[in-house]
Length: 148
Image 1 (cartoon, rainbow, N blue to C red):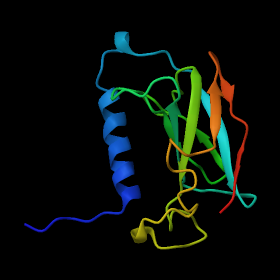
Image 2: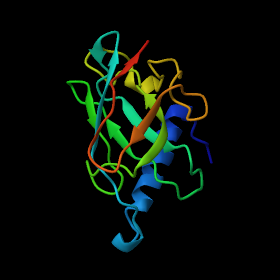
Image 3: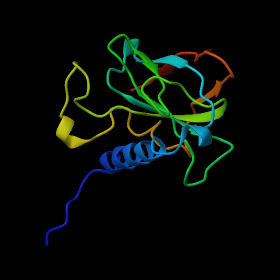
């Protein structure tokens, strides 16, 4: 049987999706409260359209840790989802990763290559310099201004 070789970024997306989907299966009583979160991602002054933004809690790294995520829209904004689309994130401090795959924006590129247009500078929660705090209430995150 032949093995399938996928880029590391594709595997990361698959793992994030599967872990996110599993958290939707628990009962509402076990859920941490979440609060609406909005922000934006700009690269060279332009929206990082379709980039994946993931919030990784700094105080909790267990296998069942919630990792709220969102996709950057055409205007550069994103809203986070934890249990359902756009519901927000639990309060706390987060390391923020951004993965912007080639071909995921109207600017062009090869979507099949799976290369991060940001050179993987912001894709690892252990090395990213991006940080954010979610309050117990609606939170507007300061824009992430990134270099390509």
